Length: 145
Image (cartoon, rainbow, N blue to C red; front, top):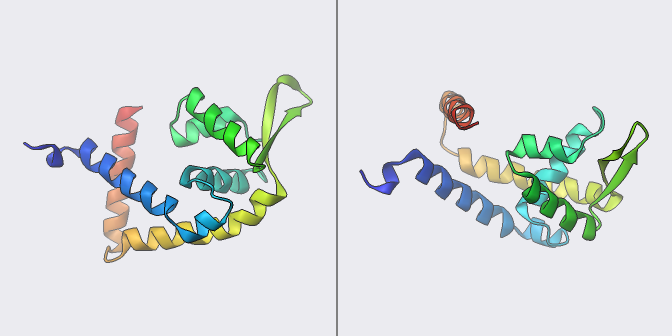
């Protein structure tokens, strides 16, 4: 059984292709050279800030990344003027993540590009195939948590 018959190998290869596609995007490149991951984080923050405060630990859980990885991503985003870390009144140790106006403006462009990539990935697939694929991926993800 060669490596191409391993689920992990195929997922890793697909992840690399998706990342490369997002990072080579003209839209994302024009949006102040943010990375694909920054686009995902901006989207997550944009969708969730209206529901309540979002903290670094929320990103770690959502994207299944470790604290040092999240810290590096957020530090670069802060340096590039995409987010601010704002202290909360009820706990001096906690800082909520807030998008800057610059990031909000970028969000619309990035969101359109993500939708194009999603359409490209699912071209030729039926809704049933997509739902089956997502169900299997969620089971694998749960097995790995």
